[in-house]
Image (cartoon, rainbow, N blue to C red; front, side):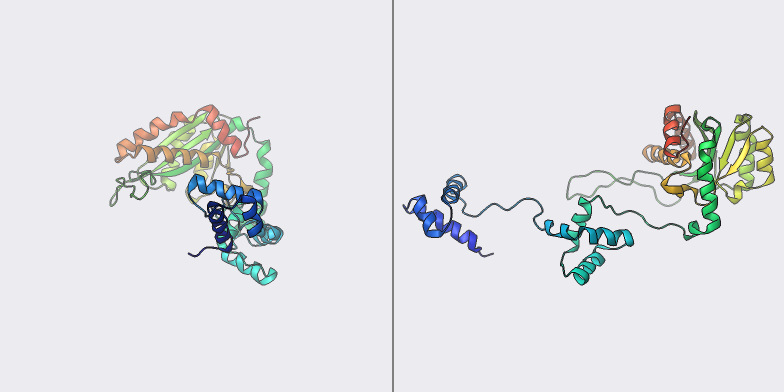
Length: 320
């Protein structure tokens, strides 16, 4: 790579001073400041280099700030717009040319992160939206001490952590089971006091298995005045489920459709509870059903009242 005009002049200034001319005389000859000539010579004596150090930081992104309103407006109007599309918009509408990497740095500076966008279009149906809104508005009237959130999550003997650390340039390798494995379903009832009524089912949940869970596991833990909340799933429906719960003096409420995405809130504290449970299972990496059950049993005490209170608060079911 050839020298730039500035680098060539810098080299000639240093050469002239080294040849015997004073720094003032050299500055006048080459049209630079005396202080600049002195600094260039001092750097040469220190480092032996006449080339300037590369500039640090992002020197190209400052120009894009003039188009801040246009870029952020385009992102707000179309949240899934790509960097290439943004570059095309700036070129067509403003005559400004920026690379996608420059636009990415701009968005990063303005805390615009790439996130998942997809959601079920049925959420926008008037009847679905009304049910979701009614549930959200009714939440403050529910006594958190009485809430019992029922949920299920899959547990498998092939769970393992999928990321690790290794030296740069070397592959990170750890054994992960493939082929045949056993899948189980964990069902639990989350209260402010902890994870209650746990059951591990060998296989997927269905209506018969759920009815057995209600009768044999959940009902013995219910008290009069409890509010049992569960997803509106086929396996959860049926007169038997409602009758068994209401016979204890508790009430049954079904969540509205798409409740995990209600106004950006989890709306179900057991969603985050099950995420924590899965993290424990990945760490333990149980490889048999017996070991899996043991791990689940030892993980349940981690859902302390303080932890459950945090889960309820995150789901906007705050304790009073």
